[in-house]
Amino acid sequence: MSAENKERGLLIVYTGDGKGKTTAALGMIIRAVGYGWKISIMQFIKGSWKYGEMDGLKRLEPEVELNIMGEGFVGIIDDDKSYEEHREAALKAYHLALDKIKSNEFNLVILDELNVAVSLGLITPDELKELVKQRPEKLHLVLTGRSANSWLIENADLVTEMKEIKHPYQKGIMAQKGVDF
Picture (tube, rainbow, N blue to C red):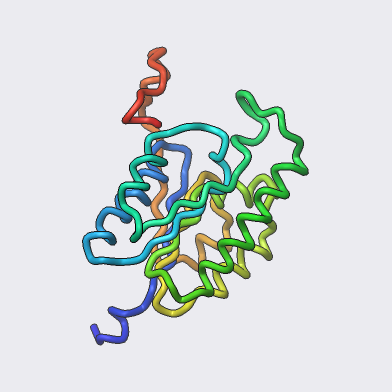
């Protein structure tokens, strides 16, 4: 393998119906910080909830910046926002993500739950393609979320599908602090 290949950024997708997509991306952050990398993570959906990674990632500043952009889970649980409000938040996240990708300031950019935003129509397939197209050659770009777009799967360097085999919720065990949120 030539040195040129080692310096190429990867397009990585974590998708599927199982748990662990964001967790896998967060694991990459820990590894990357160990090498002194600069990382930006943009959250497209989860914005309205409080979860442990928010405070955990703050401990990794200044190497890691977290941009919480979503208005919460769309159309489920306690969502009282209109589709237009969710689309507006997603577009704001999209434009910030585009700026981060094009800035050449980061080694790794993670677009958390972008796949969900695309599958819900909050971000169009053309907007997704534009984000990927704008990626500098050395930037590693990670996209997470269920229902990854077929174009993205085809064009990614690495795709991992999380498949649920068993989940504690099936036994009536609710989400656990520190494990699930």
